Image (cartoon, rainbow, N blue to C red; front, side, top):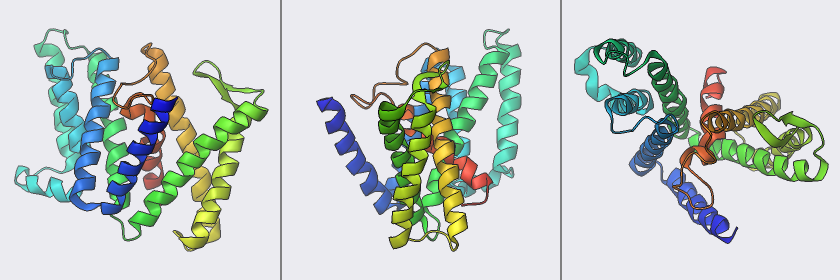
Length: 264
């Protein structure tokens, strides 16, 4: 427990500092975290990250991850990001033939889905930070996600009786989920009094509900991965906390959702 607290304080302070600094240091660390997260997913699938399959997965993920201003460096290719991604999918499918199915269609599908999950998640986190009100937006999102986690934990311990999804995460309860969302609404509302992010209160409340619920779903998605691949933690990068995906599962699931809903 002591190790968990120490790691949490140090990593949390460093993470917040990087968000405030922004620019290149923030971008480089986000790319590094995404790379570690993809590495963890590949290891869950028992795909060696430095194999042809693993390197292909990394390339897919980086293509979706890197910001638009960096993608612009590759204008000489005369292809948009999506077109490059589709081209790599064709190459990946061809690889199943070239390797005589040593690299299977199932593994190709995993590589594509994993790269989308990690790549777009961290991409839109960086995208949000570099908006005009990016700093206030990022901290608003983090406060909602962290408040939801804390509220769900304490409400679940105190009031939890009805299991939320026992096949995926046996300890989570409906009461805990509701408590997490209520605490997120409370803390988030206090935050917006001092740092307003949206112009209307209705939009603010809707945003908080979406982020809280999507964050909980993201946590369940990561739990489903680990249960399917029979691992306790995604990795061991953070002593007492597991891997990068264990800490960022909610966040990288939330970011594409709020982008698609037009909040970013």
